[in-house]
Length: 278
Image 1 (spheres, rainbow, N blue to C red):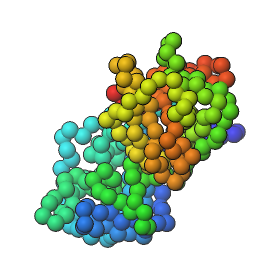
Image 2 (tube, rainbow, N blue to C red):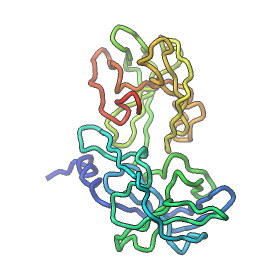
Image 3 (tube, rainbow, N blue to C red):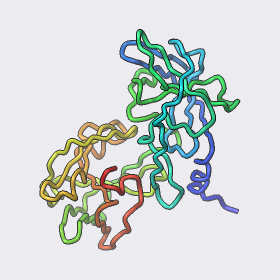
């Protein structure tokens, strides 16, 4: 019987998963090298959709001590397509879904509480999983942003002459036959990046910022005259290498808008960004 790989991946999310990585990884807290390893391991705790880096305990260069788990560590499930809710990076590191023990790291005169995790699983027993958000990271000599990249996840960008129309009711936001379609892994949404000249409304820069490990830091834009269209679009002004073809182009959160391709309306995808506060 044939296997639907997307369904297999969804089922696998319920498990503790790991993948050794053949890179040198350095972990920095300011000027202090917290860890330096050539044997890093990507670890996905159950229901997590992005991994954290784990390093061998022997490659952690600062003292490690047991830590109490924060009392406010809460899971924040979010929808992603039609499967079970998942945990994305907005669920903080402290909300662990695998058995194990929280640890703290002493960095200089400071103790960073709960920034490490020692899984109980015997396959991961000599590793310390580290909170990506608590440190700066280098893979070889290049910085990594957002979260560690998943080796099974990629983005594809393709120019298309198909007619893309984005609206909200009777309000036309953008219309183009010069879009670049961005396909990202098995995410249940295609992103449509449009030339600014094909945007039909005035956009005002918002204070909202997001970071993608594959595309970089996003600048968000609002339709200033409509309170329901705040931070409704974004651009990558200085994208990472993989996303250079969409530099300066405008994409919209079509989870909350009306989208038609070649005149055919498409259903709104269900993602963590379906809510206005996402």
